[in-house]
Length: 242
Image (cartoon, rainbow, N blue to C red; front, side, top):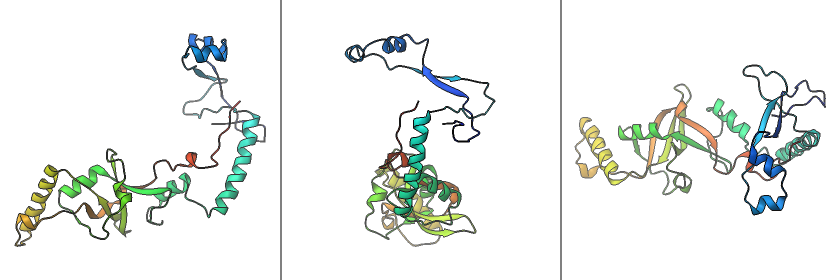
């Protein structure tokens, strides 16, 4: 991070950045013309972080990015704060962190910027145990469908809460393959028969949407939607250092 004492701060830099002095390709590129570097597809130059004083264990590495960068950052903060107030405090990375600290005191609707995810391993475990049931509250929800299914998380939507037990009732999309689906049907059938219900295996059907009640809050969190983090927004800060 940046640090300087130019504006009364007591944060002194403890390191600096320089071109690698013992990397041959870096030094060769620095002493060559731009045309030569382009024509020969030179290797990417290396940078070094060099301590300018002793750095204590666990001390943050602080670098002076330069006066021009510092002035530009101060101007950005002023402009960003103004635009945030005009935009009615659009959800940011900081506010999403706060949501996760106070999961029972926030809005549970998805926004253009953030979404809710549940732990996939926990969701699969509870589904296969027969603890989740079919959900028919909506015909189709593209937000739950259009997601990277290789992710260790499942996008979910909150349908209910229990603050005392610190749990959520969540809806999610789960489209298992035929083998998995058959196993789920057998498990559900066995559970229903043990409960004394007069049914056959043909009576067991699965929708692609499920609702799981009393999911512990630890298995749910609020996150930014892909490509919607603060640094990707229009007007995000960009400025050369030094």
